[in-house]
Length: 120
Image (cartoon, rainbow, N blue to C red):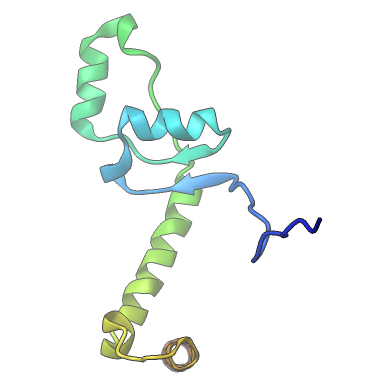
């Protein structure tokens, strides 16, 4: 009897998940903690105030890696630059190959634009 092997790449667990303040809930943090994944999520001001108001029962202050969070911002800005091109944002392309070609073209345009800006 043949055992069907899974298709695609093997699953991997990330070392950290970087998200914005919208995902700073206790549920999201506990979900990541149970799986041994570091949460790089800044705490909302109201959540921090509520925790401080509870005193010792509020738990310890949350800390996040500011450098990793800055990298998340860099990636998000690049994605926004890619999506500024209408064909990528709306997925007009019918095939994955043509969509990937559009991504490559847009990334090349961004790269050349950055080169020209640094040369000035």
